[in-house]
Length: 234
Image (cartoon, rainbow, N blue to C red):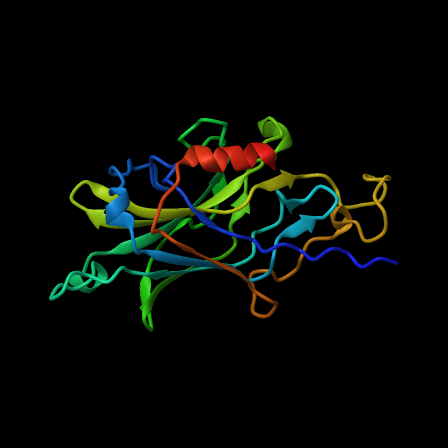
């Protein structure tokens, strides 16, 4: 019996910020320029990986399952000589997690929906800033959103005079979200070992389990349309 092909890495890519409000509904200030965002590094780690369907070459998740615990690590760019970083100046930096779909050519996130604490203040952890998100749950399925895949977005923002201002943002690969039962009766065509028969992963937000980690640097920020093109292909 041939071995299953290796699961690809869950890569996060730098993108323009596709959200216009924070999780409370307050408008975000205009994002900083690409040059102002350059140098920020973001590492996003999922405590356990999402499901990957080899036959369709796509990532999957079930609407009723909590997402695995997500840890965000941020490195700030080196400041000009003789100047401290933003966080060292006392500026509060936050990480915001959002989820939704991108229509081809759209710059703003659609079909948004994520339940839980989606905004966390970043705290210093060694030489990096860190925030952890637990028990987040998706609110929509791909079937009810034009069969479009979803993306998770992590936006790093700073508190300023005009409110939260996005500094940089990264996007996950496309994720197909469904709500069908994980049974042979519901999916009679599924073979033994099919990822669509995997039952809910218990304790995915607890300690233990291998982490899926990916890093992205904000040296350059492609448009959200690029992420939309990837979504259309997923």
